Image (cartoon, rainbow, N blue to C red; front, side, top):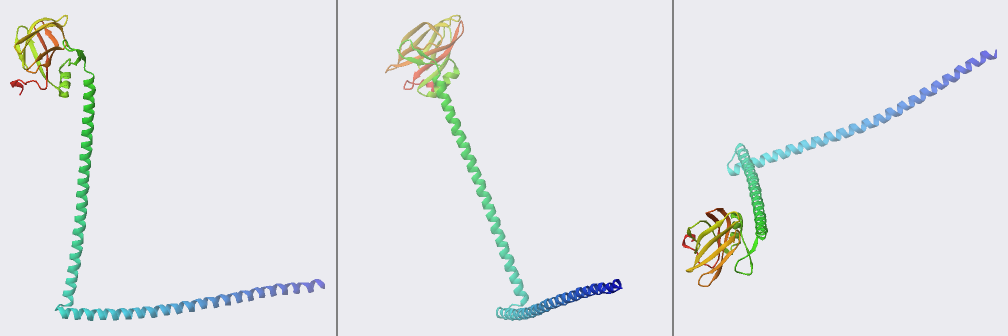
Length: 275
């Protein structure tokens, strides 16, 4: 009998719990519906306010447009132009301003390009000038170095050493110094030949021993240089105010020919053929 009494009590508890849950859900739903309704009311109010503002703005725009039309008509009437003519003139002015602006922009771009081109040319010229200066400086240095390396030999008259050239290239270097005049020559045996302001005559050669003999004719005098060596400075004095001349024979080409050069002071007379 007690087991039968306990069963109904258990079902009544579960039923009450279900009812409680249902009541809570209903209350939550009511709260959510109330909140949603409030939000909807607020949104509707804001929408209505926005519509009112939009309507007001549209009215103001229509009023402004009407005033503008009236002002345009009055302006057209005052200058004798229709609305269409005013619009055409305004459009023409706008197009002209745009064209002027475009021309100005193109001119500025062209000017900038020309300035850049000139700047590049100036830079290139400066670079070229710098290169030329560098090359010139290097050439001068090389020339000074080469001249300093030329052979210095004691002359047969003076007690000082004389810088001589042993070939044509070295003679060109000596000429660049510019302190003396140089005359190259080639002499055949038995031939009296004018060289500069003097005359030379080859008397004898010894090609094996690189020796030779020649006569120098200067100021009605004859200077015999006998059994001299190649590249030996042969010195003599010539002129109203005697100045030191030098003859250097570089090569004994054969039994009958030698070649070399005459070195004369800068202030010495210059032969007519050299002028």
